[in-house]
Image 1 (tube, rainbow, N blue to C red):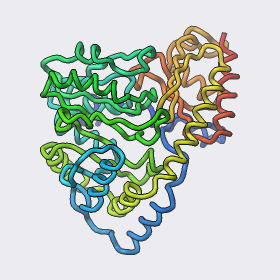
Image 2 (tube, rainbow, N blue to C red; image 1 turned 30 degrees about the vertical axis):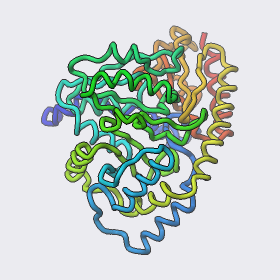
Image 3 (cartoon, rainbow, N blue to C red; image 1 turned 180 degrees about the vertical axis):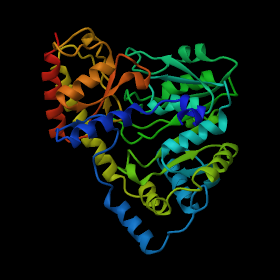
Image 4 (cartoon, one colour; image 1 turned 90 degrees about the horizontal axis):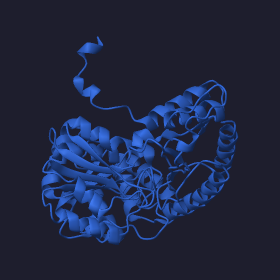
Length: 398
């Protein structure tokens, strides 16, 4: 019966992040102690004031369908947040609430990208970016960044990648998986290029905004000449430890917002009513819990980098944001423990999963085949245990 399925399914791949997590769960189900460093999920609980707002919403019977774009007060809360944190002026009509930032990305891409139009994505990039472009029928134009440039695209690289078919530029800051964070000066330099090409849209994924170790978050939407072309994507999952609550949002010009509303009207109608009420508390309330989480992530990053330095052969840069390290593991290619030979990053990840019982994600999924992503969204105890296992496993390779 498989030949009767849509050809759409052949355009894109399953997310490697989810695949590796599933393999880890399968080993764990057999009684093996697997330490998960593959998924990008804070291991903290949702802050109490947000949970209280949700409980109140349940008791107040906010249990019915909502407007497709979201409750007016929830969209207003996004506007308050964007003004408070980013000095960006938006109205509720510019805001679409969705079932997670992933759906927000999907709708924004589907609303803009047509068949064979090109989308420039600097590598490394989050696994879903390229696949959503493929679903839309567009063509991915990957631009390889370098460790020397902090895994950030330069204005020269951007300009060289633009063609008459370029429809969109898609990036994140802070970046998953590299942890790269663009400064205001770096964004301004990119903005100067975009000014020369007024028909290119820019998707700025800012989901890791609060997990920033180098100072104030900067958004490319701050440049007035570009703001109408910027589609800002954000959500609650990372900064508020609300992965399961499923709320992301889009801030864009009215035309894009209406297009996304039209798409969402057919996909999900709207996101969860209770989550929207909780989002008001998250977006306009006390950020102390979020900042405390970031402080703990900073300590875990420091610990992780120190442990990696003890392992010969792993080359790793210091990330400025998010909660991942993205080391180059190519020095292990061709090595073997006598049973398994490492030929690429995929072999490396599977070797660690089966030998050290530590899950990670191969860099191929992010557009960088010689790297591997490890999360440090886990306890310091588990981080120590995981990297001790990794070190032992890698020392067996000759």
